[in-house]
Length: 401
Ligand code: PLP
Image (cartoon, rainbow, N blue to C red; front, top):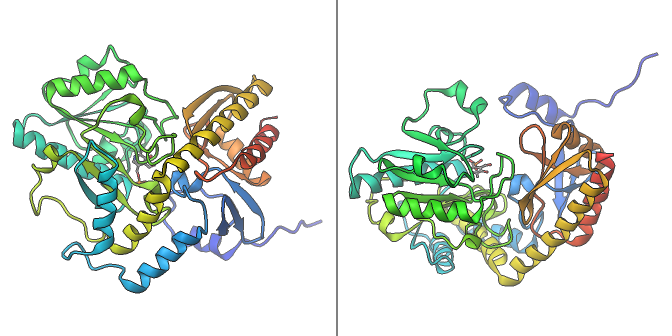
């Protein structure tokens, strides 16, 4: 007897034949989204706790975003950075108005490009104010800062680095949350330190207050720039506009990207004026960065997320999610070993394979991400409501059983 299997969707066949195979993808094709739900070509619904990897903070099909996209697309999409345009200048003004630590913005197109820019600016700052020997960049174990050579050089995971070596020299790795060990790593030759206040890909570890404050103090002592990479944890994701806020420290540069235009490609570096003044016309550039379309959309996203009532919503729904995750851990003490993360950036360290939970989630209509072998990562859209948390935790309860 032969069994009939469903025909492979042409999008999957084409992907497997023509697209460079850098991602393993499940065997369904997502076609549209609405609110916090996605739908595949077979009409199946998925509750989305991935949000395009912490990108779609406002979910799918938000009418104001669609309108902003349409209006700006009919007006002007791209002219390059050779000319003045309006939306980017307005977005920069808004970002700076709310962030007293920074006076300038550089727009680019992705997270990794923001990290590349920050590395270059740090080198130029040290060369201008000190000398060319002050060139070491310090990063931490468990870090993820991107895939281009500079950003990969400050990314810790060996399997990502090793195939592409030699990477950028003069990078030193220190131990995340090892306050006592910092003094050995942050020395006079260090021009910058890059850190995710809440690590994403590296396993949802949260920097301790003591650690980040001591790091700031040592950076000041050696005039090394502190770069907080908030590409994943910034812009409301952890319950405050910027993830460094609860630590009471001010970074010298901030890298942001993912959620800023809710899915259109954008990155940005926010800089303190004393760093900005060392960068001259011609030092850095980008053809697309900060273009009118993406920055018009980003204004709508930024205005929504930065609103105090929206940040309050994130904190409230995070508290609700916290309680649901604690309950899950109590119901499955042998399966859920630890809860990590903060706000709407959460990890469940499990006994077993996180990828298996993710795959079972596809069958159950719940999208979750992973971080390493044993961490199930939850990154829901920031607009989720308690009812969505209930739905996700009921599904997770089944998946963990
Ligand atoms: N930095 C952090 C903290 C990230 O989480 C990521 C992506 O996951 C990046 C940098 C790289 O961003 P992108 O994938 O947009 O290049």
